[in-house]
Length: 247
Image (cartoon, rainbow, N blue to C red; front, side):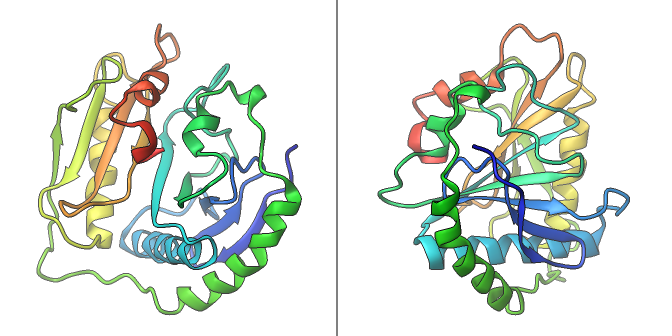
């Protein structure tokens, strides 16, 4: 059963909310409040503030040890939408999935099902956690201001072929240097993501961002097109190397 989208925290440009169709208790949204807002350094810094606060709030309330982010660019799920969360808004939206030991259902188990067969988390279960998440987000947001690191004024993003391919247009974007994300990294990633949509046969992207490791952030970007014969997100979730590690 779908519930109304519930606001948990509002910042200057972005907000953290509970989606209408939450796949489990660790499923949150980071959503742009106004589609007319340009994605510049201020917006990128505010996104990091919301993400860092959401990540820590999930750790505090659910003991989530890692988070995966899923988003689409110039693409809306169609049909069964296997591998993709339901569309929540016409504005840029990022799905955040907190992962913890003993979770009753994983995001991947839900996303492998056609959208109409998924069983959303019960409203009562979500209410049990949302009060704690809302309080934690307010408390944490004041302590999670993103900082532009002057030592890395022009962050570089590399593009490489994945070790395990899902679809004809599967690319991995990554930081050239590890370390914490800064707003400049997000701007460089946004430019690289947009560049991937300019390839022949690609009109949009489905992207999965696992918890950053020692080497920094990696974005698994799957090219999409309305006439595609194979859903690359389904192939991606079926990869043994993805399994529980990402979703």
